[in-house]
Amino acid sequence: MTMPWQPYKDPAFQEAVRLLNSHHPVAIPTETVYGLAAKFDDLTAIKEVFRLKNRPLDNPLIIHISDISQLSKIVSQDISPFKKLMETFWPGPLTLVLKANVEAVPSEVRAGLDTVAVRMPNHPKALALINEVGPLVAPSANKSGYPSPTSAQHVRNDYNGLVFVLDGGKCVKGLESTILDVHQEGKQQILRPGVLGWKEFKAVGFEPIVNRDFPKSEVVRAPGMKHRHYAPLAKVEWVSGIEDIPSFSQKCLVLSVDSLSESEVLQLPKNVLFKDFSGNFDSFAAHIYAEFREADVLGITQVYILRWPVDENEPTQLALVNRIEKAVSRV
Ligand code: TXA
Ligand code: MG
Image 1: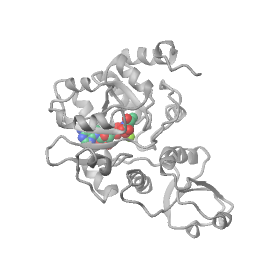
Image 2: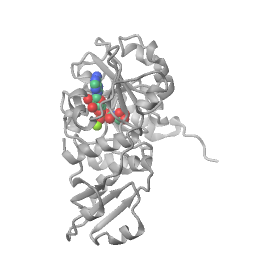
Image 3: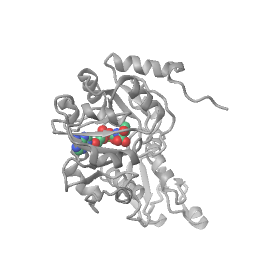
């Protein structure tokens, strides 16, 4: 039998606590993607987070909590109408945008807005760390514009080992949290799609506005989404079928989720590295950023993604389309 993880017997955990308590950012595991964390009111460390990521200052940060009681110092809004959402989906891949307690939450965290984004990550190491040092801001730990990291090694690669990473294994979900803005009554809306979607919110009595045209229109609504996102160095393109994959001598990566037939696989040109997720969208979501990053590591300059008939009722599929569209258009 394996022993449960014990923070106080883990030197890496202790080091993460020490660094956070002495104004240094630390990369932390979550179930979505790795985050680059700082204490939510530590301006020295927060500035370092922006600098390390090369993140535009107008892109606000998400505050990560480990207990709903921590909201009282962060949020100025009555949270009782949202208890059901919190109890159902936290810890988990849901970020809520609420009215901020502007006295307590630094303007740098909110990018000057009067709202604040909060979530409770579903990872034992992240939760233990927040219990120990208090709420943490944590943008995805990638360099701005690059795909989010879903393993400790991805973070080490991005910062040449200069950032301490609390290794919590591979991220289970692999796509950033769904952002649900509830700060204005009657105008609740999903700002960023994720693995939780309209169907799940409806089941607990919420019917946020959904924009069918996410990939483009989201840009204006979540401040950070106007910046370039999720794109590897390799060019990413959609293709409708394998006949659209040019057979040139350069190596390329083809990602597919709708299984190809054996004869189609045999038809693939020799220069193709082929990954098939066989209808498993959760697995596609968990691995897509790792695949993008792997292409760059291997020096592959072209990634093709086979289109599939998207089920509009499946949030993971919508979130995947959103991230792929952004990687394709490089915005
Ligand atoms: O899954 C996640 O959410 C990951 C992990 C580390 O928790 N974090 C993450 O953070 O994706 P980041 O910084 O990469 O994305 C945060 C997004 C940005 O698009 C930002 O604009 C939006 O949240 N955001 C933050 N505060 C906001 C606010 N007050 N109103 C609207 N959008 C906000
Ligand atoms: Mg990000």
